[in-house]
Length: 166
Image 1 (cartoon, rainbow, N blue to C red):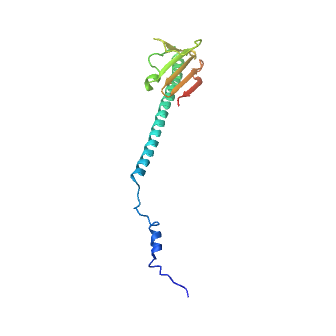
Image 2: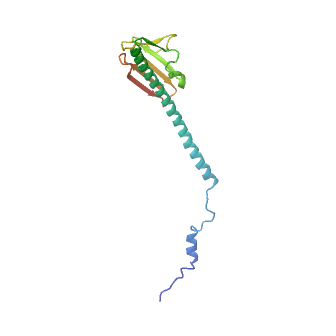
Image 3: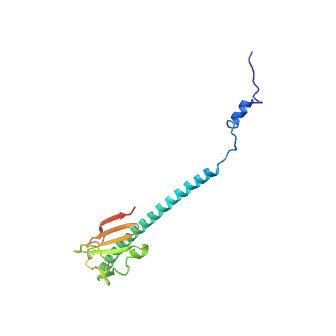
């Protein structure tokens, strides 16, 4: 003869399995587990904030270089259209490169061996014949530095070197 169990009234062993193998304390997180989770979250947020600020500084540096390239092309076009020499003062922040992000603008003219700060009243000339003085520009800031060598025939960047910190 076979024994039949009543499923409606489970035995004490079945009740013990349903409660989680006889757990003596209630379910939940301890204070230590919560503190560890919060510390890890704050660490991840801190790392993300530092990396975002570095990306912003690099973006500002690249934008300053783009402003210099665009300004050079616009001045060459203006010289061609007006058939007059266009002079761009290098010391007054005509590019907006150094002022915008707290960086420094240095120049190197043809024949010079090192970059230097622009002299007082120094200008970059764009001729109505469609050529400009060959010049190299270095923009340095907290994120790194960019060097741009301009082509005298097109006033476009013929050489660009980007060095990013970190």
